[in-house]
Image (cartoon, rainbow over the protein chains, first blue to last red):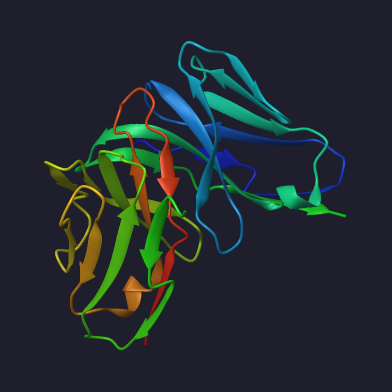
Length: 113
Length: 114
């Protein structure tokens, strides 16, 4: 099935350091999105990058997309304790009986104060 | 004003019971979804509904049924609950546009089946 796979599964860094998470997907896409989920909460959209874009910025977030490798990365610069959360990449998938965003398994990011 | 609200937030029930989770969105979106998140945080789409067409993930048991009284609501009914149904269920809404379908999620409903 169309599904992203994030890497690493878990990441622990010191506050102020940069955090990089990677995502791989299986089939061609129109766009790829990243979402954040704080503990016990719903997912929140962070950024969308279209298939014809290679890099996109939003505040301290930088997303890259390599369609030839079917991969994306999310970089969080100057991390803060509040960035502690799980991060998911998502792509739109039509098929298998349900149209909608298909999410990867997520990267759990812990920012140590 | 909460964009996507779902109730209840917590639900504890016995095996075999029937339960419902309600979801409402005030964003004017055309499409609503139900997702199931298991204990390993894996999110699985269960249903998508765009006001005219219900699309069911073929792996979802028919004990699960979505019901939409109107465009702003998509409720989830679960019959004959099983232990494996324990999970967090998320409702979401989106514009339904293939090229830029950004989802807004509710806070989740944690279902525990004893």
